[in-house]
Image (tube, rainbow, N blue to C red; front, side, top):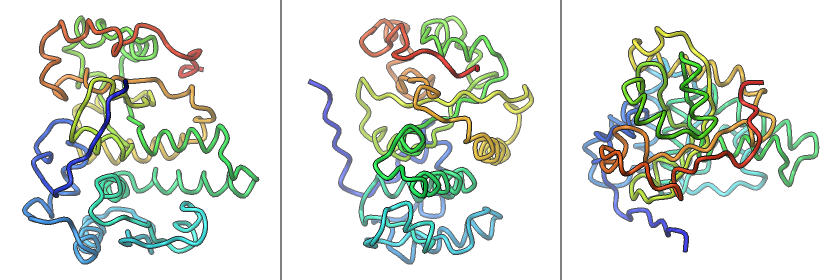
Length: 273
């Protein structure tokens, strides 16, 4: 049977120091000492703080707890600037953080859904499916060494994370976008997989401060979103294999589980077209 994921019920902040949460920790830091789930005032304060720091959020955008949209979720956001956000809910909490980390990309994703809906793709087709995959479980993989990107695309996990392990973080790295991923990483399980978007960058990218890297990726991904025209543009990525993201992967034997670290793609590769 597939693993059953159950998110922790109580608010907690120990995840802020975990390497898998580096992307989210900076924007969430103002609430690090909070003992309970953020309320509306706390969320509004978090967004106000981000704007004071220069975050280029849409002018009216805010997360509204327990809002009930009368139209499609994406249409409600586009028309009102309100992001419906369930109280005491990890999935929606990390969605709020995603808006703060990737404001340009999240805005572009919303616009893509709107354009698809306007063209009649109400029930979702390849355009909206791909946008949803990125928004829910996407991971940006900037790379400066094409050979490492090819190892991801060709699912050669031992080459990527054992033979060339020292290259991780130096010429290729992972920056989660999808807000389902940090939720599931609170209770990680074998089988947890993201959808990787391989993006070429210059080698100096990896020496920049984190905030500069994230801003660059936000701009780059938003500008190139039109390239994601079908789900096969995104490569499967077994997240627990990422160095530092799971203690078991310090042992090379961890990568021998071919049920998780599968050795072949499920669809033809199109990332480098």
